[in-house]
Length: 65
Ligand code: SF4
Image (cartoon, rainbow, N blue to C red; front, top):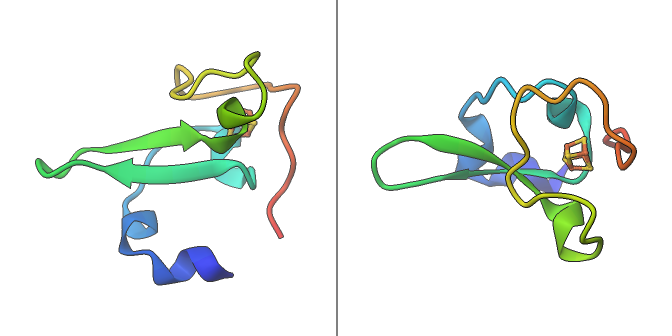
């Protein structure tokens, strides 16, 4: 998986269902905090860029891989 090349994905974020979703991207800031970003928000306005976590259910969920 290409995401494994991104060091930011090594940071753990307890994001619930998003952690299993192919639309999740982990972003981190210079202070070491990490956030779960929903890439689906770029193509569908129903989804928030940074959903409140942990996410338990989501209509846009699609499993990774
Ligand atoms: S589509 Fe839903 S489950 Fe997937 S990353 Fe976005 S908010 Fe999380």
